[in-house]
Length: 146
Image 1 (cartoon, rainbow, N blue to C red):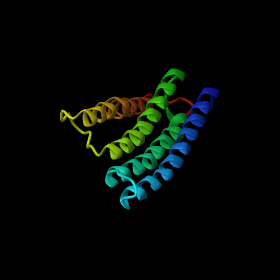
Image 2 (cartoon, rainbow, N blue to C red):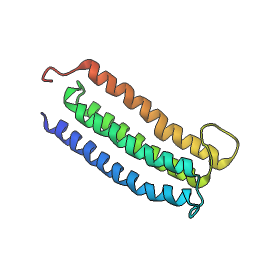
Image 3 (tube, rainbow, N blue to C red):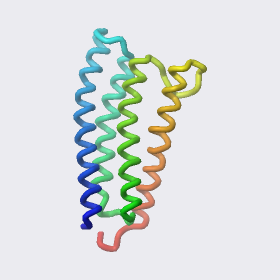
């Protein structure tokens, strides 16, 4: 496997491992919200916890699939960053959303809610969709050595 592919897999593996740790630590945030020790929406806090854990496994899946993808160095780098940014943002923005006690799923005219909606759209939804399409394209192109 080329050096760039190995580096990309290492980057993704490390990013996934750190996101697992952050997700597990977010469990403390969830407990504090659920017991009322912290003023935060406990359901959104739990969603943040799960977003980190599940997002890490998406990152790991992309890392595993790197040898199967027919993407060049630039395409692999873009895919890796899109997946990492989308999943870290999903964890963090959802944690902030819990603290702000807003839904953030549409414009409501409330500044906090609308800021969360914009952050989720630009940092989670768009990069996630681009990453999913890029990943599929990589599989469609395949690799001669795979």
